[in-house]
Length: 27
Image (cartoon, rainbow, N blue to C red; front, side, top):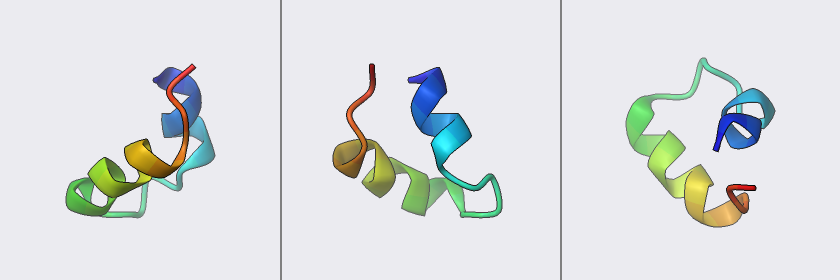
């Protein structure tokens, strides 16, 4: 999960981040 956070810009709202979690596999 930490990898996903680093890959996704923190600028994105937390709501969008939840969507990114589905796109980026939480290793």
